[in-house]
Length: 465
Image 1 (cartoon, one colour):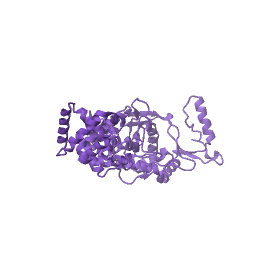
Image 2 (tube, helix red, strand yellow):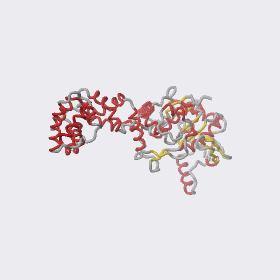
Image 3 (cartoon, one colour):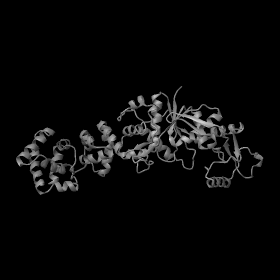
Image 4 (cartoon, one colour):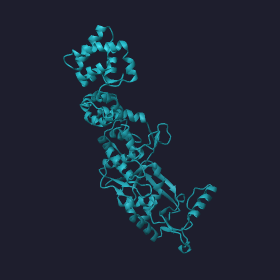
């Protein structure tokens, strides 16, 4: 059997972080088994579905590197097939027309609440003669759900779960205007697309029982269901925006690398021994549903940032330079010095050792690319007090005489100067850093000077004086 999975988002907003993890688990499971991963856009809610949301979902998946097989499928375009399935159930006596008015349904729900019951449909049109139908009411088609016995599902994560059929009411399959409901559309599409495994969040756990009844009534082969635990915040509460319930695009804008985000999402609810850093190829080789836990995972921004820092340190310098240059350009309002990109690329091996996000990396890189004179922050200005400023002026003359402009020669010159001044090297290096970077924090200062070059270094020191 060829494994077929699907990711089926609703295009009513961005690709949120929980959806991204669901897509990742489906993708990895499929690639592990050499199967097909399908993308279905569940756009039956035409009032809320937008093309912008579809584009954002596709862009988010592409950024994460989660490619799908074939063309994306629009659920709304398949409405005719969904309706045909409902009509077949109606013809076979497994569904019926319900003529309840909105007012009757509201009264039904109110009475159930008064009696302490769940607000389920009471089945009043289940066996009623259609000749009794009131005039002017467009009927819905409801599924004639079994009332005796149990529906049993052997979930691939939670194990066997049973529900008494009396707990499930007769759900609507087709609305009064003939449009299919979500439950019917999902079942029909999963069957038509040959889906063998449904992997989704466990907030859909109850839906699986209703959908199982539909599959059986239609005589279709059941897929295997795997419902993965939801993601909570670091405090154990339901995930919200303050915890990180954002769109994938927001993480991109915050400077997270897609491989880092995928690695982090993979470890939210799945494990392989003690492995923390897992490459894409390793993930494909190792991933199986047996590694998915049953408890809710906890999203922790700090852990994600630390993991992202690891991936930044491993990333190609040229790629990182391409990512930071647009951000640097915005920071300096286009006031870039000639050769700025080359400078940043040369400095990248030192810069990336200290950054946890691309945004932080770009902020730490700005001083390389900005035109003179360089602005100094408050700490840098305080550090360049009267005596330190005069010392930098004397050091500038020594540096101007250095023959070979390299880290080794520059550091030797600074050490000799410090000895002659009777001070520690740090009392020389820190004012030097303030003058050259505008800050009190930077990569090793002699490496900075080598990247800036003789002319720029001496020019910045002159500016600071």
